[in-house]
Length: 78
Image (cartoon, rainbow, N blue to C red; front, side):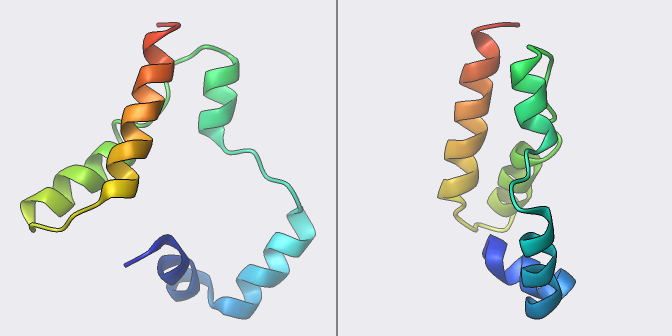
């Protein structure tokens, strides 16, 4: 399931579009963590998705890349 599919499933297409139009630009908590040089929650989010998918033999190249990138950024300041 892609991120878009999950978003549509959880919120429905129209409420999600309406919400995004209201909030405009959103910065997630990981961006704030990186800006403040504090540990992110990547091991509890992206890494868990990778682990669970791997157990089911599902490839998750986006999440693998994202997790590795965030960890590399953290390695520069932690």
